[in-house]
Length: 456
Image 1 (cartoon, rainbow, N blue to C red):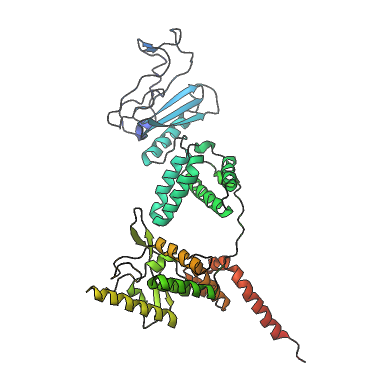
Image 2 (tube, rainbow, N blue to C red):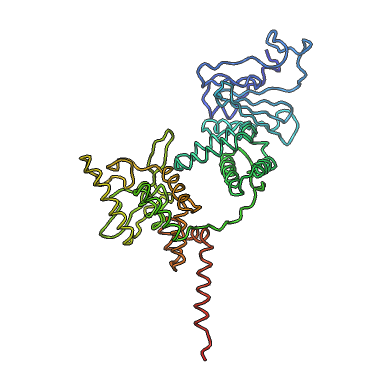
């Protein structure tokens, strides 16, 4: 029977591209995919019953449509002319976790309004959609920001450290998802982002904290833009609060000595760690990851190649340094002396237990032979405790600031300081410690003044 419901089963260029197979069905069915085992044609979704192969309308007559439906054989999608010159394309792209079908739709408008106009263009677009689905390059237009977060976090995880991923997930789950997770990407607006930033600020969060949230959202949306999930990244039009560079306060030499003295009374081994941190400017994870073979007494050097981080459940693991670079820095007489004393204490304890300290044992460890490193969080809490006991309001990372500011004040150039701290380039050092350079500028002014002073 040649009824309008059968459509025009005409040959198509797509027949040459895709292998012959079961007919693609009417767009109203939409979920049939001949390549999916167990998939079967569904029923038309037009209201009313189907009698004698002809769909019936509300009153038993034909539905109020005067156009034809064109189906393309041997493909995963359908192409329907919903009115003269207007084509609806639909491709089946699998199923969601809850079992509902994923269907990609697109509407093509021809330049003319006559029946059949724009058919070749619609065929090309359908072929492109099918190709995208087969490659996995497809979006439904219904994705939420929460779904994007899941995709983005999985995408970047291989190139980020576990510590960084833990921080990202904390921000995503604690701050972003509750506010934006259910919003569809296509309707997400800069106004909604600004409302989130205002809410966070009202709760007392610092501008730098809000900026970190903004940076995470911007990164996820930037990737969505590259994946063609969105046309524009709305974070470009959002207005996170400005961050004013705060001057870093480093403890004075007197305060550092007081902290180390308080630490030596409680736990001499950690006092050595704090002393080494102040002398080298190493990060806490780098200090915890030090092994005895990293110390070269003859050359008076220390190699920093790894960093320790804590895993979920109280475990630990090692990774590369933050800059993914190995650096070797010099040790002075004081650093070598405290390390020698610490080594003697470690060997004395191991000898009492009839154990031997291996060359690759961790320098700072609760184990008598350095079998595992001391955890970074333990060092952080210990430092806060002894600093409070010494009457100094500071923290562990401030020892790194102490090392940097003292080096700059002594006249060492930013490039040398950056190399010792493990910064990727000196611009980071200049930005973070610009206030320390102001004192050097005063010294330079004095030198220039003496050079050009008039002689009597």
